[in-house]
Length: 272
Image (cartoon, rainbow, N blue to C red; front, side, top):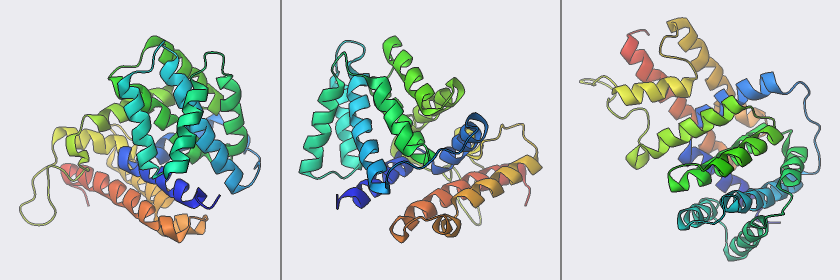
């Protein structure tokens, strides 16, 4: 299992590359603080949790791709994209393909697999969030999510402890990300220093979403949301919670994205 560390880093890299890191804290903070009454007990070792996560990712992905009758080329391409972002070697890639094909079986007990994932990873809600994002992202590969896929995604989300609102938020934010060619950040449309231009309307709307507040929020609420997110994602605080030094760059990227979103709102409103 010497590849586990690389896998974990690749998964987190996938998150940073495809979904603004700050969004994770917003949705998780809302969903798990309110939705889970008891802190899940820790099951297995870290390696066990990562193994179950890996297996579940591709098994459930295969089941989701097949649930509407056929696996499209776009869905196959999306699955391959996940493998690339995970930086899997050839052996791991073949295992992922095998798991994907296993999940394609019509009678595969997908609810049991989701329950197993939650049993092992319930103490690490960020992994459950990432898992659900990957599944929704693959479902969006064809441009639209079919009715059978929506039903299954709802069951998966519920099995992981996420409500319909959180699932809808994930879909909305993933669609937003897909609609931004080049993956530009929140600084797109304005520059720092002299001669800066105001942020574009779409960048500003995205900035509010990253901060987890509506455009109608007060300046005080905006500042409070920013401080909360920075407290959650700052590299030093993450390190204190056990983040390996090798993943510090990921935490720094999240922090930069939160700060860029805040700066866009602050510049637009004109407060310090």
